Length: 500
Image (tube, rainbow, N blue to C red; front, side):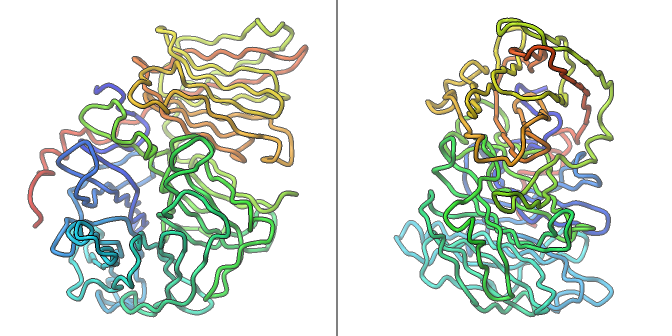
């Protein structure tokens, strides 16, 4: 096995991968397309890679779906099922899959123009296996905006229209269409505070509030810098959409909420056309950071995805908030569940140690409070990542996590101010450990932390320090085993060949 290659997270067979694209569910299959450079382990001419899954966990690599053409590289975008054949690109009995994506002219950019990004369309009539580009691309020309990209489409039932959100530097643009081909600009949203620009990979969808009949709209935006722990990150706003304009709730107007407080989750977008999407939304993110994405020490490949996550919406005393959980399908790949119960009655230097863990694994911890505790994941080389809480401040220390010297900001301490994040005490951690990542969900996903790590061998020891006197601590460990399609399979299919 290649060093650092994840077992339970999707990664490309080889070379460079970034943003997830074209997430769609159709005919029993989840499709994952992604930004892909098939000739290098650093960013370059973008294609769309492709993988298919029946359950969001076991992925099978497919041949490249979209190649650069005379209009430029294939940047990020989305796919929807055109159930009623509104585009006329399919048939009533054979609805087309319609992809809308940004194309990027490197020549236009090199010549100093502002109109080198525009939106194009492709469609598939064979369940996403092959794609035909629309003969009259681009379908949305550039109006003179340098950063004009990453379309995401949702069906708006009330107006019987397709709605597109598009990133335009410091704005989100809203378009409307009846046929997925002809689009009109209907509104724009200027985010009222400065965050690292440009905006990228927006997503818009309605979501029912749990334990309520109320429905709100969620707007997710990725930002290239100024995230809580440096580099790129993801914000979201809760509000309402009337078919023309998105209005942010007053509480959130000046306070964007971060979807992930770790360093390594970006371009998170959701699947379209999944069953039962009114009370949950399933999405996935690129598990990396633009600060050091082209320098991480993997060899034949660069880039991995987070575990797929279910988003749900709750109402708290500090406003509406998204909660996240790893999709339940992962449970079908877990085994050897070990339960431990401990009574904390020791000094700060005492510790609870559980070793010889088989990896990857899921670790669940339930206790009264994490104040004053240290949670350590370590291997026999004493490489470790440490989480500790003090005075409502959660700190993540990956300075000794393994290989860290490829970028000056990788090994720094990260922190999260917990006081404003919750409206109830934090009692549970769910931690998913793979060969090069640690994903932590606090208090059933009220707060999420995603961190890459590059240890010589996977962490196989869990240490908990600082238990309170007579405090009951419950720990569950579960092994996770997934065998995704071997990299050799995609290579045999001619991944380095030319576009058909």
